[in-house]
Figure (cartoon, one colour):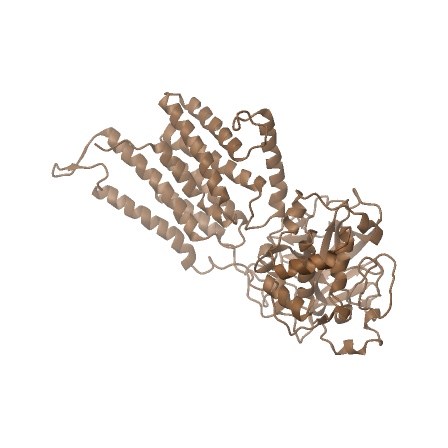
Length: 632
């Protein structure tokens, strides 16, 4: 006699298999271990309730209690009774984790490290799906409907993943769903009675009848079609831009459409296309600020063993009220408000638009354009910057060295410290940083010690004829040869600052261009540039430092907190002071004629020759999954 198979435990296993696509989001498998524990507790609670012949609502309450116990065991807050029984303080702890997850979702990009708040959110979601699947498959005996909450799990990586979600996790989840259907079918047959063939021969419950065999073959074919069809049909595959820029079209095949800005590898494009012989006009900007700082385009702050990468931005429409940087500003920080008007040419083909740091209001931009207050960038998932005309108000902050020295280090548990100090361990870099910051008592003096290290006196020089890349090996080579261009100076300084335990990132944008009509400047590919931004606590925020030799960069900016360390004599400008745009930089004067022979940064060409963006692929995966459910 065929032994009874507990559909509840099969439903729990199928839920775990359906969660396989989350492997595309997390760096490690901690989430799966924690989810398995919680789902096992939920399944055990359901089995005990059914053993006691509890009604359906009693089974639901038992599973919810099991979910609470499992979460308490996996994510303890230190206030539990008997080490695993939740108390009101435990649920307050869960609320804090959920609140922190909202911030961490905006802070982290895939793949996500093991952050408690995001792990809690994932495990809570899987546990909740396990409750619903058990309720549908066992309590209501409707296992086919259980595919809907399973599909909800798959929609999470589809919505946030940079590239197409791998096919293997989808197949694993589909197999779990089919397993649940087959188990329910076998259980129904076993309960109904014995089966016979047309000749009267007894058929075992697991022996495939012609109809059942045909159904199983159709299920396998359905899964194969759902996986293979998006890979075979043109236009369904391929990521967005491999490089920045596109040809004569708008970059997507659809007029006015942009693409996911998280897919644009600004850093790789900057490193690979600096040697452009033709100068291309990209932006015209008009501002009432006499000496503006760099116009920002994007941020690169995801530091992995392979180097710096951009993460997916997030934010709300620019048509809403933007954060006011004047709130909570620290003493020693001077802020002034200005207004800028920008005209983007057809050569800048990106879902990012250039703005000065800390914009407070925008005009002539639709709600399709979003503002990421953390990265301080404006982006769109639907539109493109080509041909856009817009204006915005912004706050220009300048910092006194005394205020930066007095700034406290952000708390170690803060999101900015966790994310913006993360870096691979490179022994040579760690040793260098320890020597440079030895004896320094505050963050600013540590940063200045690192910043001052990138000087001509220490043997550093500018050249475009160097190896591309920002991995640990590339940075080590740059620090050894001491020859590089803006990407390597910016990445190296950010890496060293992070090694000192201070948050840092790389910003990409435009240096100051030449004034052509009063207060209007023209910015070309030769003005594209990368620099370092360092985070200071106490309400100060992100502060720019440009370690690239000033004489090599057209429109370079220097300040009182980050002066030109290669200048032939001491320069002490007022906070935020800089040479007028287009004027000769003091560090490039006649005192050092050898600098005239150096390579000049030719910028980044964005208008020609780049591959076209492709349409997003996740709708096809979703359609394939729905087709599979309909087929089954």
